[in-house]
Image (cartoon, rainbow over all chains, first blue to last red; front, side, top):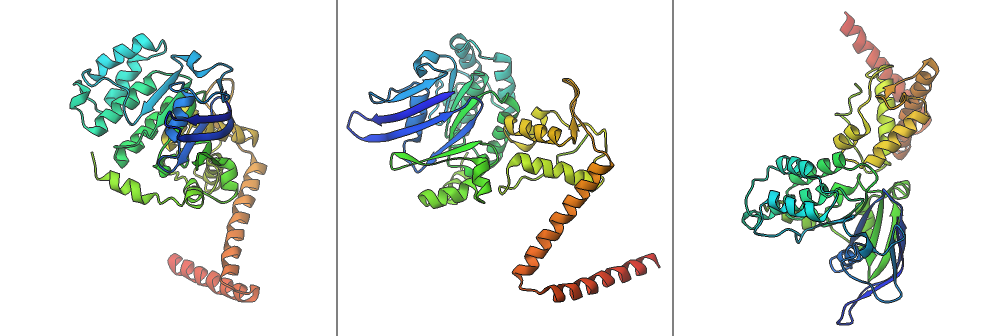
Amino acid sequence: MVEISKLYFTYPNYKTVLQDITFTVPAGQIVAVLGANGAGKTTLLKLIGGLMVPDAGSHITIDGKAPQALAGQIAFISEAGTYFNDLTPKAYGRFLGDFFPSFDMAYFELLLDFFHLEERPMKKMSKGQKAKAEVAAGMAKKTPYIMMDEPFVGKDMFTRQDFMQALSGTLTGKETIFITTHEIKEIENFVDRVIILKDNEIAVDITLEALRQEGKTIQSLMKETIGYREDGFCSFLDGEE
Amino acid sequence: MLDFAEMVLNTAEPVYAQINEFVKRQIFLGRAKKGDLLPSRRELATLLKINPNTAQKAFRTLEEAGLVLTPKNTVSILYFDEDMLLDIQREMTAGLVAEFVKKLKENKLSLEEVQGLLQQEWEKGEKNEKYAEA
């Protein structure tokens, strides 16, 4: 369980990114953290994952402990990439195996096959291939907490769907997942809950079941909350790779 | 094996409710029979690209409705008796009629007009069937 209350985060240049964030996520829930660029989504994920420390007085615990005390139990899957450019995927996998006690090498190799990734230094890979290697490494860590920061960026529609399928087939239902994305369509039937950040605060926090009872979709909710146009972004990316 | 390959998810109802509806519809249409095997929760999650907890919830509600039996840690099977089948038939028909009436009302038709149109359409169908037989 992730418990957050009165969370504030201010950068050293005194720019406040998050203020008065309070919510609790039970184990096994899949939460979409949405909002416009710069709304603080990535910052929130980094704070939960223990990569950054919030302002004094803020409260974040995971299973009753500070995030930093849960090293090896939180996996980060990031658009920016967490791999080393000179390593091949498998060499990187062996490196991760030393760090994450739960790293599953056999499963990692299965995912590399699934994504058709060859053994070559990751700096020589395309943006899409790097993203796939990143996802495979993150999932093979088999941690109870997974932070996914824009996992679909740089992936075409078919790869996005392959990824969703790999993810659905991999999870046990016990993992708690936070996911930020602009690809609303891919997660519409996948997440349990949506949190929308706006103007440094939580603008909406609703379960998918409650949302649908109100006759809304995540897409329509985004539109009414931040005036978001989904197509503007994804059609642009589909041409890449 | 109950086939979910044709199932297309919408974004209007909760996913577990859609899975329930799909299973009932397969029974209603006679495409699913008593004793048919169901995919595992993981297989269902992978096929529909949903999260495993949602697949679990769909199974749980089907089990609560008595439509799915899962003997101790084995494969789940479909189950229904005459009464349950009747209930499903009623439910499916009621839903169809409710939807139909809603659309007719949106089109500002009166009950009399609809009854007339219905009779006309019904008889047209019967004529066609007779031609088909002959």
